[in-house]
Image (tube, rainbow, N blue to C red):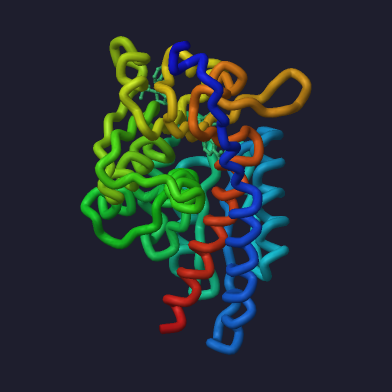
Length: 290
Ligand code: NAP
């Protein structure tokens, strides 16, 4: 019997209980902030009429309300110019009542997140979008990591997955997920390989992984041939299905029985991401009272 066909239980590395726990702690902190002289407030700047973005922003606002954080959605419209967006981010950065600022993608025209996010002061950059935040993260300095990348690290810690000295492979190198996730794994002393669209023989790399993080946005990119027996797989991908659902980048059926653990989609990285955005906001609010 080969290792791959041996009976192995693949743990479902759910994020829902962890997210609930984080939100409960955020609520407690948020309730203490008025006595310290401030009320936690998050601003989400939107410049698109994309429906799925609107749905996502509503879900952030709802989660914020549930934890006692005020969430202002600043909708600039899909025709907003980069100057208008930059100006709004500057105003929010200077507003002492605002503690967290998120610039939601997609952005209009050729506007880039990295460029516009330079207008978000790093102290309020709760989704780690300002390149200064990514630079500080890379240098091992305190900074808000992008919430999705932070969710990957948080999930691994919650499920007690050892990282120190282990081989981790990250597929995807965007500034919002892959690159910062690799930095966070490196911080936890994993030996990290980053793969991308030009990586030759992806499976040869991913099969080396004891911890595999996939953040690409391609249904079924990772199958059984990409995963070594006993690996832990974190599926960050969220791909809409025709029936209105979501699937990840990993072929969960193919990998089940082979991997030691796999995050579900939905219910894995996603809920932890939103909860961490809120945790970052109360952390920023606390610092503002010092
Ligand atoms: P992105 O900016 O499009 O980046 C995708 C990355 O995948 C790029 O680095 C690209 O490489 C790489 N890639 C593309 N095709 C590849 C291939 N065949 N083999 C290996 N690498 C390949 O996407 P993103 O914003 O990082 O998001 C990635 C996924 O995560 C998406 O499904 C997104 O919806 C999801 N996501 C989920 C959450 C959550 O909360 N759960 C949050 C954010 C994003 P190059 O750099 O070479 O082009």
